[in-house]
Image 1 (cartoon, one colour):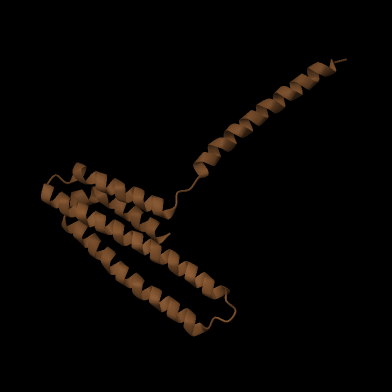
Image 2: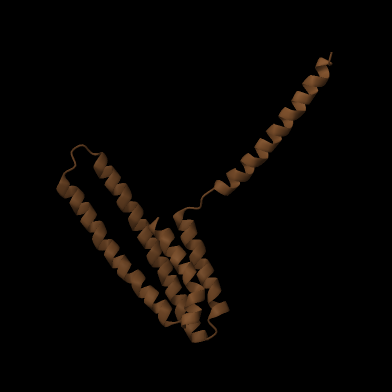
Length: 155
């Protein structure tokens, strides 16, 4: 007849190993599941774009124009994110009111659309400035950062 202590030890060791593996997997997936905010993603990509300029654009005058456009894009996208967040909060607050009227909601949305269009025009102008300051090859190397920053701004 097997010793009950040895079978308990074996079960304990197996459970301990399983628990350690579960903990390790949990920690690994927990760390990788952490998500950056759209603002953090946007800032990261704009910083990567700014840092890539000296590597890909050798002409100092064009590099300076490009860096200035990137700083302007940062300002415009930050304002776009702020506008988007404010509009979402204002719309939720208005929608939560039982006495809200359709004209109030339309006015809220129309005001947002007007401000968004103005910001979109500014962002498009920054994009054109950046393209004008680069060659096709330079822009091909830099465009991915702008694309990721724009995507983050839209989240």
